[in-house]
Each structure stands twice: as C-alpha cells, then as structure tokens.
Image (cartoon, rainbow, N blue to C red):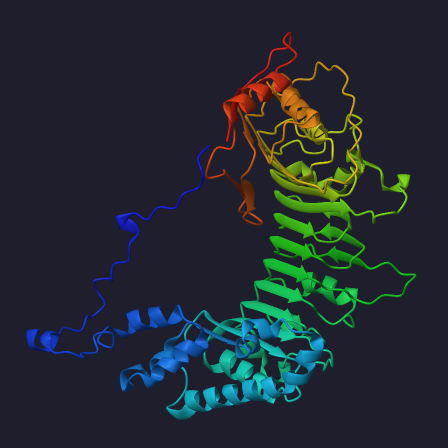
Amino acid sequence: MLARTSYIYESQRYHAPSYLPMATLSPGQRQQSGVDRLSALPDELLVTILDGLDTRSALATTVLAKRWTHLPRLLSALEFRVTDMFPPPVYQQSPVFLEQYAPAVMARYNDAIDRFMEAAHADGSYIPQPGRRLRLEFFDPDEPAFVDRLIGTAVRSWGVEDLEVIVKPVAHHIAYFFPQHFLDDESAQLIRSLTLGGCSLLPPLHRYGKLTALVLQDISPSVPVAAYAGVFSRCPGLRSVHLRRCHPETDNNIPSVMEVDAPASGIIELVVYHCSFQAIRLLALPALERLECSGSPVSLAFGIIPRLAHVVLSLGFFILEGDPWDDRYDYTLDELLVAVNPAAVSVTDLVLRFTGTYRWVEPWLDGVTPFPVLRRLLMADVPSNWDVSWAYLLLEAAPSLEVLHVSVTPCAEDSPRDVDIMWRPSKYRHRHLKELVVVGFELTPTQACLVRLVMKTCKALRRVVLMKGGRIDDRGLGGGWEVVAPQENGWSDHEKVAAERAIKKVRYFKLYGHLFFA
C-alpha cells in the first residue's frame, strides 16, 4: 500500500472563464512602471481573491485604490472573531487575564462592527448575495446591541443564509440571547444553516421553516433536555443536527434522557459529542442515515430507524489509577451492540472506538448476529494492552463484512496487560471478508493471533496489510475513513520473516489471503 500522495493535473488548474471580461493594456501601458495590473482584473476574480482572506484583511484592501472600495460588498462570507484582536499566545492566558481585558477588547470589537455597518450603508447597502455566510465570535457582551443589529441587517438585507454565532465564555458570565426580535417571520425563513454557541436560550426554531442544518454547542445548562428533543419535531426541514458539549441541568434523582419521537422528521445526520445525556432514545427518526455518538458514555436505544447506514460510536470506561476493578464494568459484545438493534439491520459502515485502561468487554457472542448487512468496519484506537484478538468476534457479528480495519494505540508501559483469550477450535468460516488492515501492528502474541484467526477463517480473504506506523483518517459521517501508510516501510527482512513465522506457526491449517508489510 502506497502512502497517500496529492497530485495536481493540468486539467485541474484554474483558467479564467471565457465570459469574464479581461481588462486589456496597451503596449505603452505595459511598458510603464507602476501600472496597477491587479486592479485591472474583473470584479469576479478580485472577489475570489478576497474570499480567500479573512474579513479584516479583505476590508483593509479598500485603502489600495478607489477601484477596491465596493468589492467587500460582494464577499460571500463575513467573519468577525474577537480572538483575532488578541495575539495568539495572549488568548491562551488564564481566565483571570481574559476577565480583566475582555471588556476593553469587546469595546474595540463593537466599535469595529459599528464602523463596518456605517461603511456598508454609506453608499446604499450590501448587494444581496444568496448563500452568504456570517460568522461572529465574541465574549459575553455588556452591550449586545451592536452584534444584534449586525445579525438582523445581515439576514434581512444582505442575503445571509449561513449564520454562526459563538459566545466565548469569561469568568464573569453574562447571559446572551439570540436577537430574535431583529428577525421577523419572513427573514427567519431565509436562514438555511444556523450554529449557536454559548447562548442562554434557544430561539423559537419552529419559525425557521427553511432551516436544514443546526449546530448547538456549549449551550447554557439552564436549557432543559426537552428543548433539545423538541428540535427534531419542531423543524421539519432539518437534515443535519449536531449537539456539542451540551450539559442540561437535571435533578440528581432524575436521569438526563433525551427522547426523540419525530415520525415526520427529515433529519439524515445526527452527531452527539461530549454531551451529558445519560440516555438517548431515538424512538422515531425514519430518515436518519448517519449517527455519531462520542466523547461521553451514553446509553442508546432505537425504535423506528429504518435507513440508518453509517454509525460512529466511541465507547469507553476509564478506571482511575488505584481504583479497584469492579465486575460491573464487564460487558459482553451483545450488551454493547444491542444498542444498535434493530437499527443495525441496515448499517453498512460502522466505526467503533473502544478505549479504557482495561479490556472491559467479555470475549463471547452467544450466537447473536447484530449486523447482517455490515460491509465495512473500523475498530479504532484499541489500546495495545488489550488482547487485540478480541476483534475476531466481530466476524461472527457481521457475516457480510468485506473490510476490517484495526488501529492499535500504544499504552503506557506501566499499564497492566490484558489476560489473553483462550480460543477454542472452531469450524466457523466467514465467506465475504476480503481485506484486513492492522495499523500500529506489533509482533505480540495477541496481534499475531488475530491475524492468524482471520487468515484461517475467511475464505474470500485477498490481502492482509500490517503497518508498523501509518494512521487512519476519519472523514466523518458519510465520508468513511482512509488508511494512510507510512512514508517509508518500517519492516526489515528479519522482522518480516519473524512475523510470518509467528502468524503461520500452525502448519496443518490452511491460511487464506496474502501478507503485505507497510
């Protein structure tokens, strides 16, 4: 397997479309020094150049010449980030430092927005551009009127459809509420994508009838669990929902359960990242195709999810050093995978991240087949102190599996090694697996055992790739993942021979597939 390489072909190079009028210079003009040839380019090309800059730099180009003064009105994206006003190392200072300087920085931020608004209205208004994006990032504002006015004007008059509002926290928290009063029902219908971060209250999302993508992150704990669950049923046009670091407050005796029952929903993608929901019950999401749940342990339960095809689950329990081992952390694979039944009937791509100090999964299946149509499986970040041969169980769980990728993550030297699994002889044969890739392979008995079991069991196996280095790049939901081989082959001839001997030591068994070292 070759390392991933990027190529640029001549056909991919940018050529100005023939319909763009190019300014021509006479031979005499070309001979003159100091001719502003950049300004001679058409607006379309200049705006393309400015779109590649941050907003502050793009606005600064208006001082170059009168030719440039109207160009910022044509930008497709506007971005105002308060962190740009700090040198990067300064923003990493302590919260006390930010608390002291945040008011002064926000005053400058508001002043910059005010000047920008005045300039925008000086010669009329921004030209409405469908699909425009506005991204705002600021500290908890004492005076939110400047930001609120910009949001209202951008949506109503400038064609902004993609809106992102991120409130950065400081020690002295001031509640910020999305300026719904600046948006009437008609203008709220213009927003297609909305990202809210650090807000103290969710806007009335039922008024956003054309909204297709919603991201909620770092929302105030005062927002109840029911508000998140209501998003799915109140916005029928939504196709993608991301919840990041949302921690609703609940009574200590009442578990935080998000229950979704939206049979009319068109949501295709759901991501839950580092939220404090103890349980998520997806009773009805008939259009859901992609699900990712990571960052925090959560109990999942599924109802009517007939189209689910791509699932990413990060599952892990971390035992603090010195804590006694408790049998209640032992689970069978059935108990974990039952969470995706009956949804698992349609899953074709699955990413599982099993993390933790100890292997907390028992090595048996009890004959359950939870993934009848699964084709591609990634077991990512498996701690090296686990008995990696445990992954062999997943072959029985997925009889249609064609691709199995495993990445092994090194553990600290003092991490206790897992007790090796004693595998019994079996006549089971898998008829569809074609490829096994192990990234981070070390010649340990358990890793050699995994490869041996797969090569002995999988009759359709074509190749087994063992990588000492390399990595697996996760492209996110729907994009799958990509195995990136190391730039140089780290295997010596002696190591290859030793690995082959360790894997093929049982000579009286037929092994399928071919070994490759990368």
